[in-house]
Amino acid sequence: MGAVREADALKVHAYHDGELGRFARWRFERRLERSPALRRELEAMAFLGDLAREADARDSEPDFWDAIALRLPAEDAHRGAEKSGERSRLWWIGPAGAVVAAGLLALALVIGSRTGDTGGVGVVRWVDGGQRSVLVLEEESTTIIWTLDEPGADSASAGGRSGVV
Amino acid sequence: MSGAGSESGSRARWKTGAGLLAAGIALALAAPAAAQEAAPAGRNPINVDVMISHISDRVGQIDQRAKRLDEKLRDEFRYESLEVLERHQMVLDVDEVGTVDLPNGHQFKARPIDIDQRGVLMSVSVEGSVKTDVRVPSGHLVVIGAERYKDGKLVISVEPEY
Image (cartoon, rainbow over all chains, first blue to last red; front, side, top):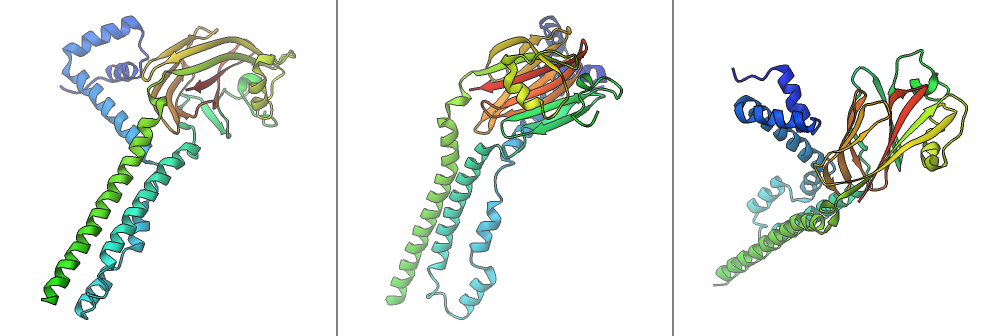
């Protein structure tokens, strides 16, 4: 009952991606007003888009917790010190560990936010060539996305790389 | 007496440590957010330069307006002529769709989705050919070899600047 037909799902995709023409968009918005199922589908799509964007934003953060954990005093060593009455001599470990952890956290976050500038991650996040194969070439200042036509077409239109066709 | 004094001193040190930790974490969390807020790019419109060209095996000239494009394509693909058909300058806000009618009757669309220090995340599509999401730094050239056209292929160059 609440399910959306495939054709409607494609319409929702097109609406969400801004691909509908002005009239089609107006018509679809009228349908949206009347159909809770379509609205749910659109909301789900927007939610997935937000998740994808969040994941994208996080993907360059370094795994700083591992780095911090290595520098924190080991739990067993801490317990052993308590038992042997050495607590008073090692009083500084707790605060010092906290300061080191805070410093490392700050450093990792700052470095993480700066490394985002370098564009080390590829420019192309997702590509769909439909029935055709797509060739992606990435260089420092240029990214080429090339759809390959069926074999047998002449070289420029077939998009073959030099020496291949 | 001295035991109680030592205990209260120890507590004070722990409190100092905890305070430093809290301050460090707050600083660390605030720094990237402040950096993002300080970046004006997120609020400015994005200039998107779109150039529609045609490459062909037919012997001809290389259009000098597409010199940069030719430098990038020459070593990768085989063609004898390159002609610039159209140039468009679009000014787009985030989530605004820019559309260009291609010579073959299809449409090229670009929609900035998000912008940060790494570049503008754009949804780009060539009707009937290819759809892609790209994260493009300012001034980076994205070249799409898309549709067959006449005796060659349409090539769409996209260069956002912000």
